[in-house]
Amino acid sequence: MALAIASRELDGVTVLDLSGRITLGEGSVQLRDAIRDLIAKGQSRILLDLGEVSYIDSSGLGELVSAYTTAKNQGATLKLLKLTKKVHDLLQLTKLYTVFEIFDDEASAIASFK
Image (cartoon, rainbow, N blue to C red; front, side, top):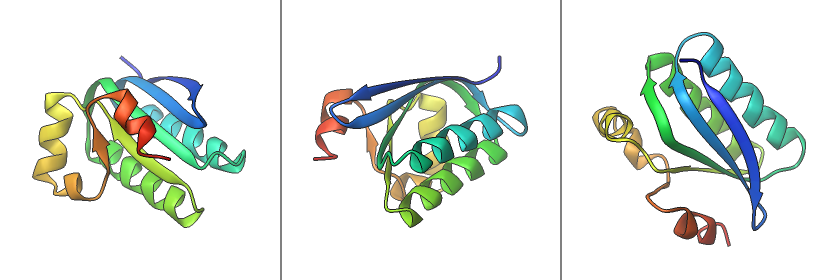
């Protein structure tokens, strides 16, 4: 299953609802393009909802880090929401859990941007 991205606006925060797999090729390119588009349009508060992401490979992980770095360099903030157990374990294993701000519920994630 390819990556599907739905975008919505909530209290000035752009939420990207991701579902599927973030893998080498189409998935990571889609994510990169979506985040670069948001930053180019001046969106500085971005929340990635990973609740429906079933799998991330090393390329997908690299893309998450790249998106985080790009956002930070452009003065934007990127945070993660609702990690599945697989994705949570992967971020723990790679020590990336300490890099990202991660939330379990949308309300506290949105509030954290204020």
